[in-house]
Length: 259
Image (cartoon, rainbow, N blue to C red):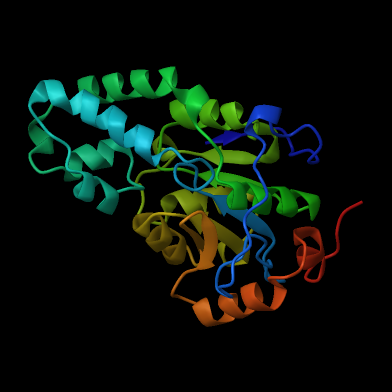
């Protein structure tokens, strides 16, 4: 777990080239680019891959390239079902994967990912939520199933490093997602009770992990933030009732903005 310097304000956060665009309007009340944050939430904890950054295609491609010399053709549908697992856990779950040389495959995959890190793009709605939370003075952390070796360069590529008080990655806990360890460690690092944290994760295993940690949970679907099934009625009401409000106004209705 890497505890970073205290997050600063929004000014100068993202690199100009990576600045997210304004999210498109939607008619669905359960989708909102500017969700309200419940008043009993004191911190936000974000997954990285597929949540803050659109990295799923490049991760799948890197793993497929690394597996090919071993005679394994990575199935796309299988990969999509297991998105959110660390590469160690992916290889352990892969049919026949336990017989493969994991260290070599992981090294080749990470080499490709690091070489293409500058191509990753932010997921606009999630980054907008992060920025709004920081304007509201809420501390934020990352809880990622990936390695610190990939998460920190990814945050740096998006210009988001200074927004997080802590970054928790797979090597920092005993069990990865869907176990709650990553989210619990992130809450501990922020010194906030887990049930006062809002988790944002795109993958089924990540959602399961956040729920097991007793956190509020919203997820990413088709580039939008949307409530998960557990507690969805309450969260959807917050999304719908605040959907038309600009994000800073939305959040200020639940907690005082910092000056």
